[in-house]
Every structure is written in structure tokens, then in C-alpha cells.
Length: 426
Image (tube, rainbow, N blue to C red; front, side, top):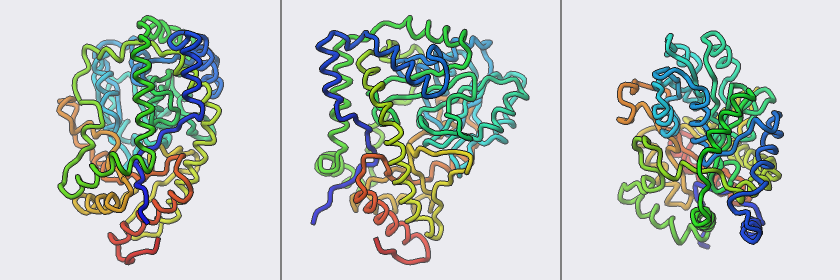
């Protein structure tokens, strides 16, 4: 019996998304309305901070940009960013007038290595951006201690990690500020947008002033955003994916092609800022976010359960390292990353999974130290280079239990051939 292919991506979708959008269109509150302030207040309350300390923005990256502008660091100040991160973050730091310095990551956790951070600090360093990559918090005790010794501003990149905690405390609440993303595939899906979470009230006011100075988007742009989001969530449904995008991936696996390059934003300088960045966060998206917060913990728990199941099936394979979660942290598994063979051997394993209907990804973010965009900042980062060899296995919340068993079985059988244990049953 033919089985549906399973996409690498899953979107968290409210059952009443269309009704929310239709109601706000009917009321004339698609763009402006009270849900924006209510969403900010609910988001802040969840983090345990005052309502005025959360500021919605058009993107998570723009929340980061507003935080940098509000801090008003001296031009040319150095800001330390992990070598493994989304390229837009260091690029926006550069656009803000700062000099980007990259610190290597721990390939086991994919997060910034505190020793590497301390090694690149100079008398010009003013800020650091610990990125809670793939949903695992950084070692915040060590990072905050280093920041205190060197008088650094800490800005947490929480784009992957909403719901994660370090020693029982939510990410985004350790440094001077944190920022979150609400793109379609993120832990909280608002079909775009982001949030700045700011500790100091005066700094929060400056961030809000910058965000509110932007123009409102028009209804056509927001309607198109919802339409594209609807298409995305339809096309990653297993049977739709099986007859639409998956055949392209399957054929590409035979010819060594990489269609992934068409999925992501083109790497380029962002000065001037692209027009779609410069707008306010619309009310209907806030309304979706406000409702989605009610589901967040259940979605996270289901993803974590899927990750635990896959870990139990893969952890005994020779040469395979499953994700490790230190006991003082919770991992929300925006991505579930397995280390195994590297180079052509890894690529072969990925291809074999794809040909059996399980869409495995090889790198979701960027090794920025390998990019011409960052010029002199590009230094060797062996930890990031090792981290980029990981294979990312789907464990997202809307997979069924049967689908998770199938993912784990296929991945186990394929990966077992890379070790000495022989094929495993699935």
C-alpha cells in the first residue's frame, strides 16, 4: 500500500484560523484594532513581565533591529553573534552600524560556546546575541556571567525557542531584551511578525516608538500573506505533499540537485531595508497569535513527546548521536538534529530517507563565517562547520503517532546501515 510522504516542515495551525480572519475583515479590524495590545500583554504575562515590555513588530528580525537602534550603541561597536545562525541577524546588526564578530558554537548543542564568546571579546565589544538555536536554550548562567564581567548588553535570539526554559525561567527574560519570530513554521504561527521582549521600561518605550513609527500595511498585502500561509499549510499535508512538492525532491535525489535554494530569502546586503520589513504588525495576525497562545503548551508537549520517541529508537545506533538536553533546560525541538556520518556518507543517508518518503533536512540555518557577505568577520568556526553536518528529522506537533513511528523506523533502518549493527527492524 502506497504511503504518503512526510514533509520536513509542519505548521501549527488553529482550527478556526479562517473564521478569525473573516471576522476581522467583517469588522474592519484586519489591520488596526485592540488585539495587538491584548496580544502584547498576553505574551508579556506568559514571560512574567509587565504588559508594556512586549512590543510587536513586522518580523522577529525587525524586533531585533529596533532593540539595537533603541540601545543607541556607539557606531562601530562590536557585537558578538554565533557563527551558526540565520544570516539576516548579523546583517541587520551591520546595517545598524555595528561591527559583527562571530563566536563558534558547541556542535553538540548548536548554541554559542561560552569559551569561544569570551575569546573574541575586546575593549570595543558592547553586546552579545545568544541564539537558542533549534529550541534549546544556551548556557545562560555562563553567558550572563561573561556579560557582567565585560559590561555587555545581552540580546537573546528566541526565534526558535518560544516555550523553552533555562532553570525554570523562560528564554528571552535573562538579558536586556529578547526577540521572537511568528513566521508560519515557528513555534507560534501568526503568518508573520515578531515580538521584542524588553526588561527596562524606558528601553521598551524606545523600541515601541520605533515600531510604531512604521506605516501600517495595506489590506491587500495582509490578505496575500494569509493566502500564502494557507497554501503552505495545505502543501505540507502528507497526501498533498506526496503529489506536489515531494516528486521534485525525489527526482532531485537522483540528479544531485538541491531545490532547497529556492525556499529561502536571497542572501544580500539589507541596506536600505526591504520594503516588506518596514511596516507595523497587523491586528488580525495579533488575534491569531492571541488565540494560538492557548495551544502553545499542548503543541510543545506533543513535539517533545515525538522527539523522545525518536530518541528512544535511535540512541543505540553506533556512530549516531541524538540531541542532548542538559538537565537544567527544556528543549522545544523546533528542529531535531542527529549527528552521524559526514560529507558524502551523510548525503547518501539523507537521499535514502527521501526516497522512502521521509523528507530529511541537512541544514536549516547558516554558517555565517563561510559567507562573503561578512568579509573580514569570516574566521574558521570548526564547531559551526561540524554542526552543519547534522541531519534534521521531522518531529513536529501535527504528526500523528503512526507517522512518528514511521519516521523513526525509516530513519533508524537507514542510519543503522552507517554503523556496524546491521539493519534494524522498523
